[in-house]
Length: 225
Image (cartoon, rainbow, N blue to C red; front, side, top):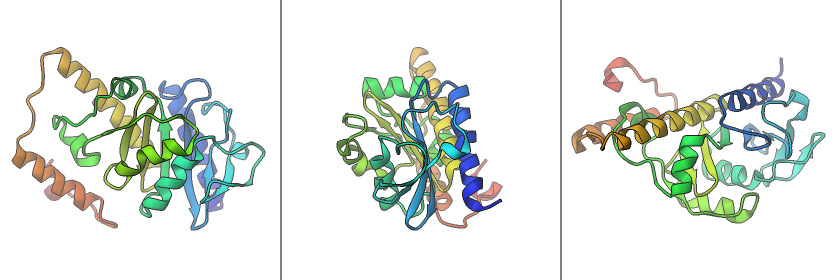
């Protein structure tokens, strides 16, 4: 199987998972992956992410212009263009509306409490980008201040966008954001969290930076787990 066919299959697979987990209702959300230095594979506009086939996926250039495919390119392609341009390390992007994390986005509440060690290592803090109209260049511009330092961003009154070294990692980051949001919500209902100390946070930050280094393999000794 060629790399392109494999990536098309991955987009379909993770689109269906988003739909099954309730992260993407109706025609919401979009996914993409870097095909090569000059193009990406991206979900089309107007199709349910749970009902796509590999042939539905569109090829676009790195300016967001359609190269080939039977459908229109996602209306939010400029968000993907921005992230790929700013982050050469990113190979996949996942945008969805997981309910609890989207609740934080709608409330304008960042997920920045240092309470979950695993989330701190993988994601760090998850900020809220200011509201901008979906499908516009303004939406991409609202994300720009956060893209370099964050693999997951809440989008005010909209949803969540996650990036990763490949589409699998972007999807897993989305799962972790939603799980973290559920946990934080319960913590607040119970009266607040026992936050990690500054020393513990610093150690987790160091682990996260090592994980973001290309070709780094996390071991039991380096992770602290």
